[in-house]
Image 1: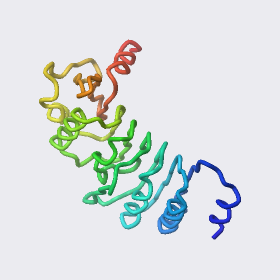
Image 2: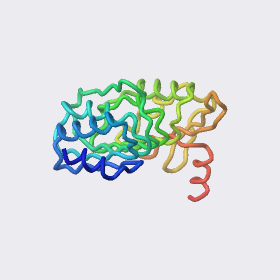
Image 3: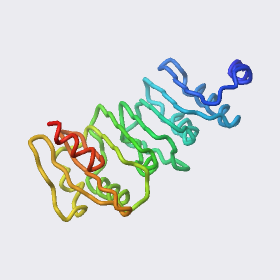
Length: 211
């Protein structure tokens, strides 16, 4: 296989992978398996998939748990499809396009930054968001920046119900609560239009003063 020859010839310490929408998922899976078998150090992984790929993408994602820096995945899945990882992801950043309903956010809480750009409304309930936020607050997970589009704006009060004694704060375009995690770090969980976000309180104050 040409890939084996290239890896043997160019012994680069770190690898960055980018598959176009022309790459067949079956081939991408074989390639990732080959890299992990060789214990290659994969810095980043990008894949843009134009069609329903629920057969292969879960297996490809299973091969991405050791990616260290960035994962970009853009794919369509059936609304009832849900991916559960066999182990936590290590990537610093996770970027998701097209649809986000397939994700179980608990699998990705050790990614410092998560961005979900969905073109249709997410089917996560306010109660599931509330449980996720509560678990994150009471954990040592690395997540410190979350941006997720396509939520129902009216759901936000239920999403953060009971998470802050001070209640929801408001400005012209934002509403948010302030929370303190169990390690004492201070964060904001907020909403602007149809986007929900998590960010540090320091970052939130900096953005506030720039308005």
